Length: 337
Image 1 (cartoon, rainbow, N blue to C red):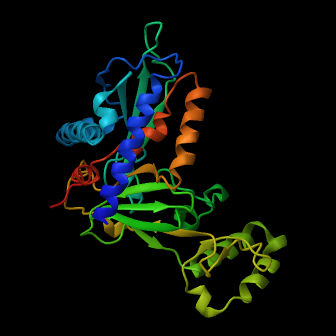
Image 2 (cartoon, rainbow, N blue to C red):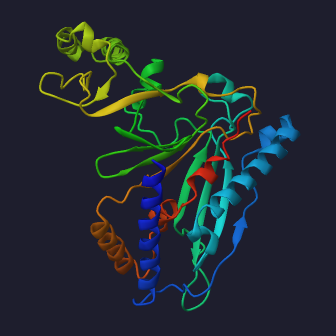
Image 3 (cartoon, rainbow, N blue to C red):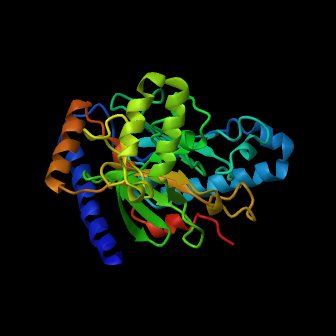
C-alpha cells in the first residue's frame, strides 16, 4: 500500500503544479502572486466546559492548535497559502451544547469540535474576499457528523433507526490508522483512527433494521404494515442475519433494505472504540472528505472548467484535502496511550 501511496502522491503533486502554472495563463479576479497568513479565531461555544473544568478547556485549546498546525504542515497548498489568508473558525459542537450532554449517548466521548478553514482570497484589484468565502469544514471526535441518517427524520424512539447511518461501500487502508471509504467514482472520506482499538464502525444486521421498521410502521403507518410484513416474511433466516444494505428491488420496495450486499451498507458507531482512560480533549477519531483521482484527464478538465466558470477561482473545497501529502504524519495527531 505504501508503494501505491507514493505513486499516487507523485501523480497528484504533478497535477497541482500543473494547475498552479495554468493560473497565470488565464484571466482571474484573484491575485495568486503573494502568500497569506494563518488567522486563528477565538474559540466559540466552549463556555460550559470552561466553567466546569478550566484545565480540560485549556488542554482542548492546546490540542486544537496542534491539530491546525499539523494539518497545515501536511499540505503544500495550506503551507504556502498562495493567494489567500486561512482564517480558521473553531466551534464546540454537539456534546458541548449543555453540561454533561455527551453522557446521554454512549457513542460520544471526545469533545466534538468543528473547524472551518475559510479561504480569504486576495483580489487583483486589492483587498480580499473575507465574507462568505469558500469554507472547508470538518469535525473532530464527531461520530455522526456528515453521515447519512436515512431514518432519523421519522423521529422514532428506536435507537437503531436513529443511529444507523450509510457509509461508502468500498474500503482500502492507506496506512495503519488511515482508512479510505469510497464509492465507484472515487469520492468518499478518509478516517483517521487508532488501529489498536476495536473497530470504530460496526455493521448493522438486516434483522435489526427490519424489526425496528416493522414496529414503527405498526404504530404509525398501519395501512402499509401488513404489506411490509409480507415482504419481510419472504426473507430467509440466513439473510436476516447478514449485514443490512440500503437498496430497493421489486420484491422489497417497502422494506428498502436487503441482506444481499446490494446498495449502500449500514453501520453504527461502536462505543467501545473510545479509550475512556484518555481525557475528553484527546483527538481519537476524525474524518476528512476526499476524492481519489481515477481519470486524470477528466479531473483536470473539470477543475479547469470550475476555474473558468468562477472568474479564476480554485475549488479549494476539493483541492485542500487532495493537497495533503503527509497522511501518516497527520495521523500521529490521533492520541494513544
